[in-house]
Image (cartoon, rainbow, N blue to C red):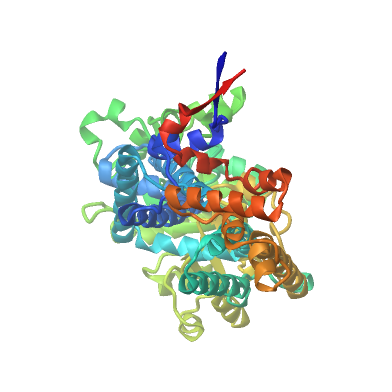
Length: 602
């Protein structure tokens, strides 16, 4: 009787098949290889790493710029002529690209870890190219159209850098397993030295990064200044239509310290509130006055302006994605809002004892109040009964005249100047975008009795950073959010920060050294002379040398004969090849091995 017994048995390797299949569409065993990766594929790996870095920066940038999404949408409105939330599609595309590229990079690193030849599938190469080109176009576009917004990255580092550093140290520590494995597998001393010093240099630089990290929140708690006052920008535009009486009422209810208003004058001399030059975005002017859609808002009589609805657009456009969260009562009230007179909001400010920051827009030259627009506004403010020290005056035009008529107004400038020049003009404060002044300049202005108000601050992390920097007040669209921030998001003393820094570095160094010892255990024992029974084939197989299939098989055959001569047990042999994870080398055996049999006659 003749029985056929296969000499080789292939265990299913589902994880390895998924790894090579997803990355390079190599689902079959015979398609995989432990041969060295080609130069072309190494180039694609370099492109993959570059794309990952760029998508990481872009995704981080667009996530942090969340504070200015409304500003971006406003810019797009001026370009496109209609309102839409353009920030969300950009965020979705950025996150999708980042996840995709990160997934490919993880697969590539796993290929390196298990000694598999990398062969990125052409579909992934197309996808990678599309992502890279899209990121380059996005970066160039922002650099040309919104260049100042790149400052948000460096400002956000003041809030996130200490924690990003810990995350980077953790990632670099995990990477030690891959680096140590490559060091053990390499047969070239030059490459080993280069790899070791490059990795150690990177680690040392990463460990020392905190020396250049600056955050105003790394300070003693007793040095923290008072909480900045919050000025509602056009009220609370997230909870009610902007520049309406309901919006300012909501700001007062959410404990805003003041109102920021945009004032222009109607054709018949009534100061009223509107941000845009036209009525198109925030009213139903297209429905009532279709022939005057693009007319300047100041060219309408107040009688006509009163007929416009200033609340319907809030639900149609939902600029902050908050309209659906309003109560039924607030919905009904918001839908019936009309344009607000300056006198009405001043009466509300008097009732709640709130300050008012006044922005003025001059009417067109053909307007009957073109030369007297400031006088009309001043008259309305003074007649309202509001205390002069609660009025913050921003317009630069005829400031000398305003100081004479209303000497109690707080004069604030939107032009950054030195303290001496400001004092000469009688200006006691600056109103700047949050990226136009740093913490050191804020402290210098404060020492000269110059207050700083920064706009627009909507995110708690940004509010916390500015709080720690000593900013006196901020203008915000999100009073309901910032009013709940009772302390900075985080604050720690220099001693606490140094302790965290040193502890994380020591833990990382310990793990890295342990990984290198574990990965190079057999090589270390052999070089120290304590491993006498191992021959070179055992050492190289234990280190998982990435050689061609033919060389690996030759080493295995030499090892088998060496163990027979030295009397090495079969159990030791099994531990070398199976437990070390080298079942994958069987993948490279000739397919003919599947059909080899031996004959036994019973």
